[in-house]
Image (cartoon, rainbow, N blue to C red; front, side, top):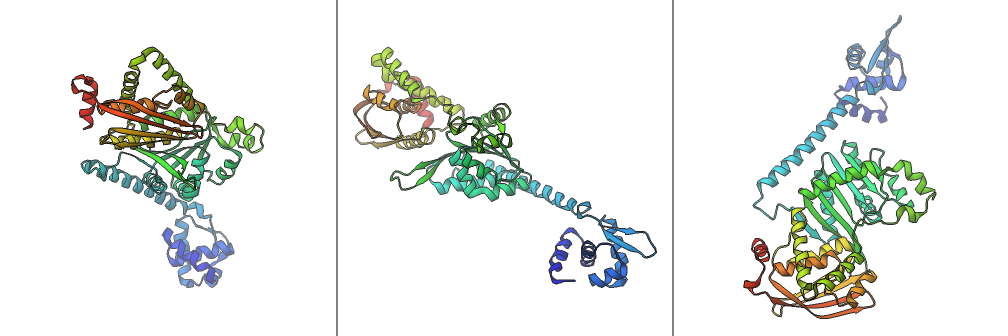
Length: 445
């Protein structure tokens, strides 16, 4: 048998064929209908063994005998018999992966006491950590991974996980991508396997998220570094909880209602039949800063000297709502909660709101930078104590929960998108602290 055929013969043994059976079957595949004498000459299998080997191959539906004066045989297509063990192996592999995932979850549930091992929620600004967590979620997914992406999110996934996702689809793990693609994105999406389910969204999500098996959620976004010499990824991770269930049901509704099959809209995008702006212009399902500017104006007009108290009350209610939906849970000390607040603002608003807390002086210096809308300048001009975002209310709510009143000592807005605010903190007298604030602080500590 020729040298180049031997690797094929060795591969066939993995399907349960003996060496002689592999060599005889390959001979019939390559040379077609043959007699026992011809098979023996071409396969290098002893002639006395040929008939027994052919009968075994016949039982496996790989060979059939042809009636005639001289006994001949011909090969049948390999799909008749060889695909069955592959399907069995694929099913076994899927079951094994699912078993590993379940064992890992059982192990984590047992080790609840070890907080270093069980991470149910965290925020990171490290690209390396974000990519690592995406890899872990994909590795632990056994049934379905859902990706809701914008252009930057697609670049991240394609650059680092293209081959891994293709392999997952081959292992019968469902991969769904929901995206509002540009013409440039179409080139990338075409390279994914036909086994992917790619849906066109009529809006561009502001942040990207991935959901593994409906339980592991990662929200991520690319941002520029402070020195403008590169970018990094900021990410927020959740494990389980109501928010995962909500997103699973919400995206399922979007998929069936407004999302379209990518193959159907692909020609429209690629040929420019609709304008790029119409197809790809982001339509964020979030309240504009102008909404919060209007809310601040209304509160300041109606509450007058109780303005700060109104902000605190809204902030505390918002924090309570966040806790109920498995969102971020703020923990003492105060500077750690401020650090978490800063990361969440960056992730969801694309705005840097950094805090420096001088505990001995009870002084907080906040710096708001980034691509700020005119609503921020309007808020600064009207001497409002917080930026026009929901996170401004949360800031006041946090201070109230930690037992502080807050006074703005200085506020300076630079035309180049920089707003500095300094707050002087004063401890609230315990006898005047609202009961709900005291209870919240006790829970946190």
